[in-house]
Length: 195
Image 1 (spheres, rainbow, N blue to C red):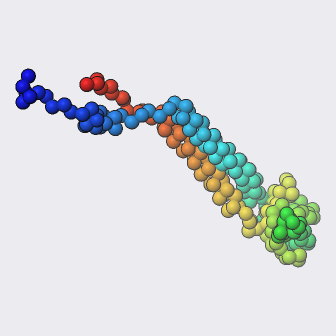
Image 2 (image 1 turned 45 degrees about the vertical axis):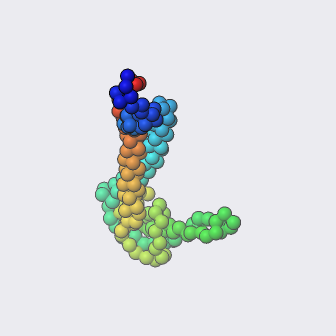
């Protein structure tokens, strides 16, 4: 065959760069199955931890909030006098506790609906000087269930309940995101004949 009719001899490297390399770029490698499963398990465990913390916060805060709110809704209001103020310090101020905090629990004296005198210590940290007169709410059938008015700490309990709900939603979102990443469809691979 004359030299003018012969086909040009393209180098193999040039053919690969022009044809096979773009095709390889369009078909990225599939991630290993083991890696997907490990990522899924890690995401599920983190999500469950968030849900566990949020559920615990909701459970304890909701129980305390309902208990106190029931006294405010169903209780009887009356005047009471602080006859004693009990001080309890948290922290010893030693090496482990560089600072201490003092909690105050007033002892309230009042007369219930039956005319019987009552002397009950508040369960809430509430500073009131001895001799102070204030309003309280209590249950006639159980005067030990008492709330000093205006109540303190209810807003903190509501915030704790809301924070627990956010933790639960965050944990659910982490689990769903992990599932979507694990089971998302990978683009189909194409085989091309060699030349």
